Length: 155
Image (cartoon, rainbow, N blue to C red; front, side):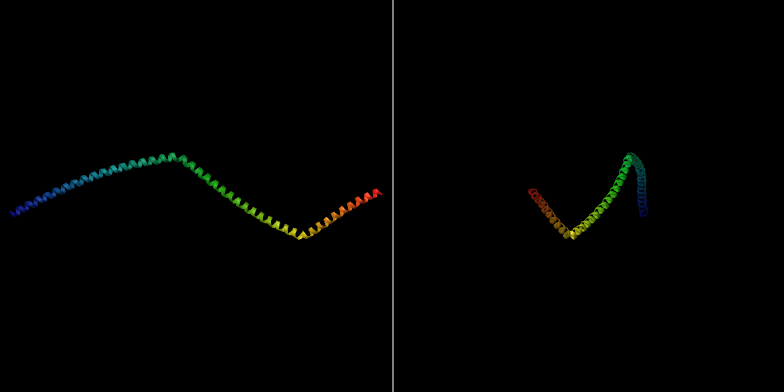
């Protein structure tokens, strides 16, 4: 009887365990089916999003084509102008160097001219002094001639 009671209890527990396992298995199958359906829905939504993204990218590409070409044109023009400015600046710098060289040569010539003037300054003073003397003598001669003419006219 004790054995039978234990056997009955064990049998009951076994049946209860089997029912729990069966319920868990059914629940797991339902969860698996639900997750599979959710996965399919997510895949479908992801595919829709991919299509929308592709459509958006296509629209952007179409609408941006002309501004992209125009931007490329202006970037090219900017690069050309920058290169031209660099060339002109290099030419200006070369001209400045030439101006500096001319200025240095002019200064050297001025120094040479000043040295020549300095070297002949005494001679020039003597000549000027002689010219002044001759001028004074010529004036005196003219005065003497004028006096002589007056004296001759009085005789």
